[in-house]
Length: 330
Length: 267
Image 1 (spheres, rainbow over the protein chains, first blue to last red):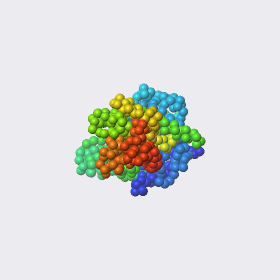
Image 2 (image 1 turned 135 degrees about the horizontal axis):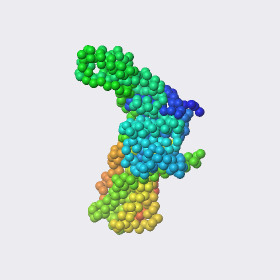
Image 3 (image 1 turned 60 degrees about the vertical axis):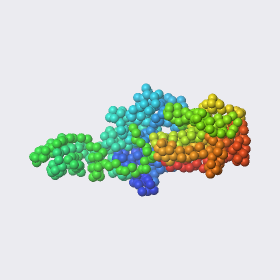
Image 4 (image 1 turned 60 degrees about the horizontal axis):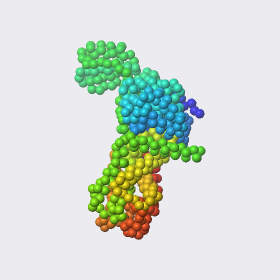
């Protein structure tokens, strides 16, 4: 057996007879027992990777193993090693929470009494015991995601794929789900997580890769990525375009990272927020330009992209002929 | 190994069929569509249109009508396969199923099998309603059950064709709309409600030979205990049962592989 839960080599996937390339030679290893993050905007290839690893989609080229099993040659062994949850994997609206977990358990070929016990256990673990006998239709978005995750865990899979598990959730539900994921990893589960949120990758993932248009544009630990990026974004807002333009030359040398200039807003990624902010203020004040606003904030995926590619994170047009209106309804 | 994988495949089909039937009970609209609607058809044709239609069978039009309605209802029931599959696909459930170590065929088989379950329920309901409005089948209980079996087999085979439509349609509404132009002419330009001989000549050729008329003739003949119906004489054979079964097998053999191929491609 290998040391890695997932190994991907030069993975390629095209759609529409090669006209659209969703994955363009992606390689990485996911070590066992940790959260590995795939970070990127919509259409960057995250979901395509998860679908190939879940044996839902065949790769056009390259290879991938999950738990040591080849996804093309031995898909059944892969399916017995994984749990899948997230924005596209879903729960049945017409069943109760219990029935949903029970169904997935039975389809995992677990005996009836084992599934029954496991379902109750999972409902309790995810705070759904009271709602267990209610139709999923009555669930909130956060409850559905928790149920989705619970169902994915029914057969104790050693590897879990979470495709944008918190997209569209309110902050509290997101926190709840993060806690749940963290305790899973403590119990030894390997998690491959896709996300559009740098904050989420930073919080959960030990290592991550950043994807853009089907290619890896950066990889490493969250700390390495942030060090490379700078820890804070200094955002300056001016009263008009002319002011913003003239201030640009004043502050440009305060950061060696690419600077974001969008209308009346100028943004710098810096390592020392307060000191740089003070210096910027002094220079702008001395020049007589009036500042309309100043803010320090955490870098976002947009900032990462600006740094790595020189362009903002853009949602690429859906490369995959998105399977029949799979609506991200939660 | 082989035996156990067969055992699990059957279990998978059972799990999914049960799940589909639960949904039927929980969605009032689905229940209305499958049970109330055929009852409305019975009442409509028995009391509103029936007075001006010649059944040409002993016992009057009601005896002609009810076997027809039963056939129509089971065929409408098969449409459920298209709608259900399309919904599952749209909601991402099929995606989830594909990542599970379950039988590949179970999604399609579970869906078509659950439609048989639904049709069974509808057959019982319509039989009871039919008898309440004057339907008197004289063919004997054995023939009645045989007639039901023929309808169930035909509808089951047809549902594999609807599975293909469900997988090809962009959403459930479209799936339903796509089945309509197929179902409508096949059920109404048939011997279900009226005698084919009463139709204009250019339509009779189609109406007489299309599979639903054959199934209806078989069912009606068995239920009424009279295989020498006008249609039987026109066709020159006494029993359309074999023709109906041949159509069933033919439809299944042609459309099931198409549906399976489509299932492998989508999602």
